[in-house]
Length: 82
Image (cartoon, rainbow, N blue to C red):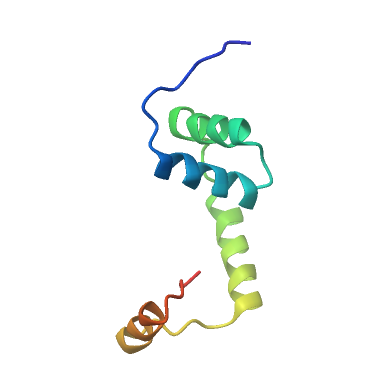
């Protein structure tokens, strides 16, 4: 297995990758490898499966109010829309 060393990674990028790794249940190394593989060797998208997943997720969370007023209110409260 090949090894590489990354130079010049900002603290902000490192922290973001660590947070993503935790969210995805991966080690930092696995998170970086998954992201590199996805960007260099993307898998074809199965549109039907993706649409089914979106419909299921929408049914679970219900409608989302994306009116400009609500988006501004959520932004001002420091909340994310996802």
